[in-house]
Image (cartoon, rainbow, N blue to C red; front, side):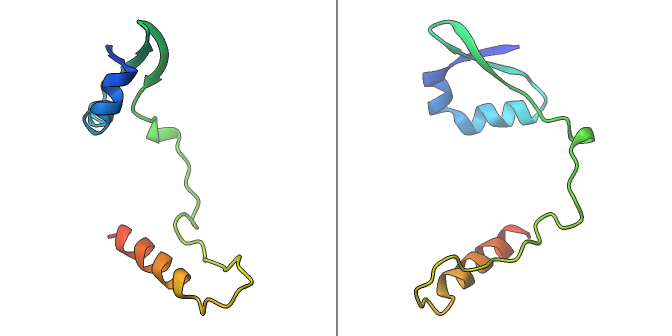
Length: 82
């Protein structure tokens, strides 16, 4: 298991997450003491329902926005699904 201090984690977050995604366990330390562990999720036990990613966006604002921000959120959601 690889140990990484918090300050290094802040600087190299993307690469350290890539290591965990590849299957390596990463122990996060603060003042040389372990505080957390970053591991790959056990996707075998991960349950996603049939409605995963299909939620409808509803306005929570009472002001008249004509749904402009909802359209932007929908476009953003749709572009991430590709």
